[in-house]
Amino acid sequence: MKADPFNRNCGSRQVIDRIGDRWSVLIVLALAHGEQRYGELAQRIDGVSQKMLTQTLRGLERDGIVTRTVHASVPPRVDYALTDLGRSLLDLVAGMEAWATTHLGEVEAARARYDAR
Amino acid sequence: MKADPFNRNCGSRQVIDRIGDRWSVLIVLALAHGEQRYGELAQRIDGVSQKMLTQTLRGLERDGIVTRTVHASVPPRVDYALTDLGRSLLDLVAGMEAWATTHLGEVEAARARYDAR
DNA sequence: CCGAATCCACTAGGATACTG
DNA sequence: CAGTATCCTAGTGGATTCGG
Image 1: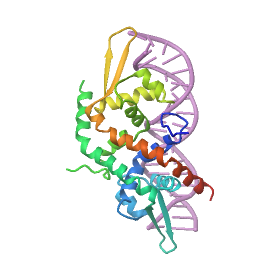
Image 2 (image 1 turned 45 degrees about the horizontal axis):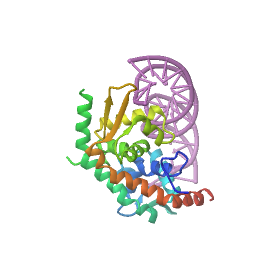
Image 3 (image 1 turned 180 degrees about the vertical axis):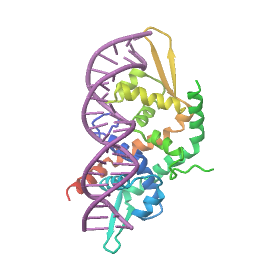
Image 4 (image 1 turned 30 degrees about the vertical axis):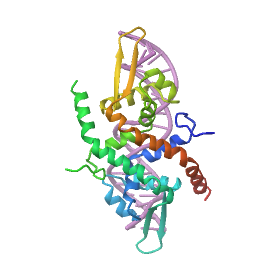
């Protein structure tokens, strides 16, 4: 049976939700250049709450997109990194960022026109 | 000033939310091959409610990604189509669908492993 | 330092009924 | 046909507190 996101029962819908999710996108982008500590992610991704960061990281780990490595040290240290599957997502996520930044002006202009009617 | 999705106040975050949204992705995909009527979209996109379909279409129209054309006929007829901006999104959205469908198996396997621990 | 747990406001999103 | 209006529930997501 072929995967079909137009079918409501197809798991590909959940996958689209995950990879389109705001925090997922930013986390994958932040991990593009190598592993990062939890605190580094929290700092770099402005505005993310502890809860959403942890929750999203767990989801990404569950889906096999990131790895979580705990170093038994004091103070504790936890590193996150992309898996092979996660790296296969990089082009796509970078594409989303690129589209968003390059077309931001057009979108804002369109909104202004729409709201002015 | 350069657009930076890592900054919480940057509008590019909203743009990522829009283009990553489940219903937005499916609508843009459905419009890939030309304009469609409201009812055609509702039928093709399995599981979407009237509310979410209308709401998402309005958002896409506001952001300049789709056009809405009302034909003054009885019964009424409303066509939706991609704008140039919307078409510039096609590669990206098709990429999301492709990634989701081709890696669905890996994601599900990763989930099964994770949940079995 | 890296979270887990709890509380809470808010909204996303579905079901249903109605209208031009 | 293509919406709009209303109600309702489940979940999102922030703030705060606690723990290993």
